[in-house]
Amino acid sequence: MIKTAAKLTPRGNSLAVTIPKDVLEASGLRQGDDLVVTARDDGVIEISHASSAETRLDDAFEWSLGRYGRTYADLAR
Image 1 (cartoon, rainbow, N blue to C red):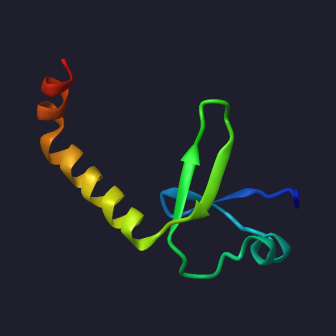
Image 2 (cartoon, one colour):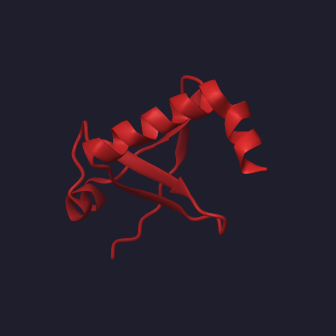
């Protein structure tokens, strides 16, 4: 396991973190990779590779939730 410090920096309306080269090499991440970023309830942020199918499914769900959010809420009752 590699543990290193990083800093959040402004990037447009968001914040960005630079991933050090040794961490990138150890993880196998490359520029342009699709990633899944997960914020856990305990404050831990996980970054992992995303398969293209997983990315498309997540995008489709987000679109569906935005369009049919009220329907999902009604179904959840």
